[in-house]
Image (cartoon, rainbow, N blue to C red):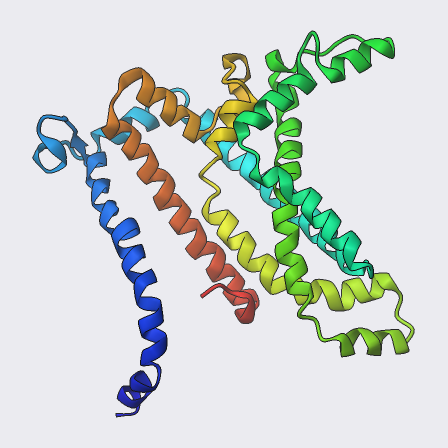
Length: 303
């Protein structure tokens, strides 16, 4: 009886969320029927439901290949580097902006840092090539002018575990820091005033008040990032590296591997199997990460 009355009192809120629920159901849940392609020998003339079931044969394409370990390692390690560097840099930038008292400067810095977020990786790829071009690039011209030997990074895979995180930070720090900055705006000013009265310096205020206040947001964003640890930004790894086969040792990830496999073999079933593998592992990682966080601090867990 109580639940029925509670539903009636909130029926307006449920009706407001109904369009979103319908949208998610149509565009997110119904397309999931396509998962069955991963278990079928897909033929265009027979369609999804008419194609023959072949069990886990499509998964053998990926797990039996010599590239499976390399692309999995690159995908996971690069995403771990992205998660750690993004977390640290975005939090630091947000805290620095929070310390600014001039709102004009804050808006200027936010606008300047957010702009790269809206650039496509095609544009960023050409910008990177102009900077790192082995002959006419800005970097090599500077090295030559200082008497050093030029460096061809497009034939040396060892440089890219450093180049790609730097590009990723440049592109994402603006949007990420805005999220943390918005969270900081919710700090009760009385805490800061009390700390100032007690003689706390900026470092003590940052470590004792500001960072603990950001921990729930940091935790949720990290859990979400862990859920995508088996996914890589195809635009970044394909456009920035110019799909150079000489760099595959450190830059080839699952997404670029799927694209090349689909382009080479044209087998949708095999590509879907690898995509399902990515989604399944990502889902498991989210559950595991959230469970660990829940045991450490229940209030910081996502669900």
